Length: 502
RNA sequence: GGUCGGGUGGCCGAGCGGUUAGGCAGGGCUCUGCAAAAGCUCGUACGGCGGUUCGAAUCCGCUCCCGACCUCCA
Image 1 (tube, rainbow, N blue to C red):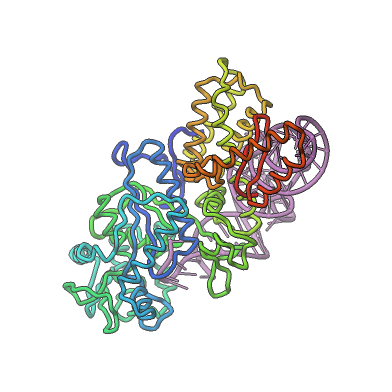
Image 2: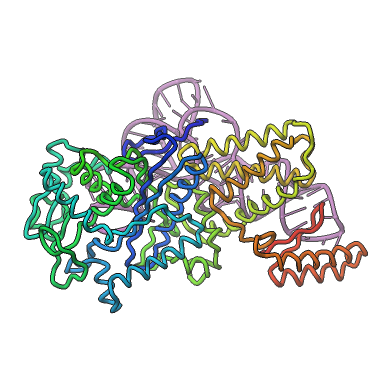
């Protein structure tokens, strides 16, 4: 097991030891959402993946600047004939100001991410707030000979870029420029203006119906579709930073073009490590609105969808995501979610049991002590191996078994040193809550549940009395009634505990 | 068609040359007034066909399926 953090760098297609540019600091940029409609659940998976990476880097002691943009301008709508901006089109549709649309869906996005307990990025820049910087970069690219203007639009000269060996166009996505020539479809917009089919726009002249528009040296228009990330990552993280992340589907053309733009303007690519999160599938297939194979975060939470038998809480979904490595596809099925729900509860319940072990710590360390420490070391090692949450989770589950055994007296508590118990509490908590980013949704022992806690304490006391008197009728009545109210009572060695839910 | 990535026990999902992943479900046992919870325990899987090797789920070849990207998309 490696003790150093290793990450899978998409650019080199191999795992590499992670070494930040500035000791103790990490700059990370993740391509954020385009806010022209409600967040896609797949989006959430990507951001949850990077949320865990962010959390783990901080856990390791790094000071992280996490930049995740909001794209509120610049994406062409492919299925429309006009080639107009997605935001503008949506605005027309709903009779709203473009920025109103942007605001609405940004809010919605934030709400969902909050439900998933994702930490906010350090900076969340918007493309529309960086038009000047984008114009500057376009000019730089032109000045360096890699951009050309045609009818008010400016294109990136991929052929010249490739010929100069300035960068290696296609390196990230494994594409060759010759193949791009052959494959490029001839019905692309403004094809006739481009010198080469694989060239892409870095500034677009606005058509008359285009609402979002800004003045520039070339025309009244809007920036190209990949420029914002090049510009904003450079502005907030510098010309070279540590990690650039995003969904797998952004590798080409988005990230490839980003590299080209950065290289053309400042001579080198933006970052040292490219990390890509894989896609979320449902029932083995890509989520697709057209064939009905889709579910929104809200539908998933409420259960109002033909694809799920019931609603699953955000934390259950988050746990479900943890069970798969971020670089693998994740297949969402009702059955898998049900399993995740149980697993999640087990993980949280063990944490509560752990808290109760506190007073029983013995003085001498034994085999159990060693096993616990080994498992904690292993869990960390798994995370160091490219943020392997499924493996780390496996170790934490093994810890949960040990904790339960200790609680039930199946393992000798006096073999666990006070030091190890302390470490176990800190470590278990750190993994479950700080790194995995889960929250306790099970109701009991919550921070803001003092009233319910008090009531339950009383009810359990009453039932314990009944049981002491072998008044089974009363004790079972209490238990059944609680069950009806969705509260489960569990009799253990040290008394009765309770949880909300089945 | 091109480029990548996959096919693992009933389900999900790690592993990627020799060792029990883990979760869920199922069987058995322990504990318990009963139940639940919890613990212990059982199941012996790697798409197919060849090859390399003392040894392959793990490497190589062929083949069959699946997915992603190639066009806005996380």
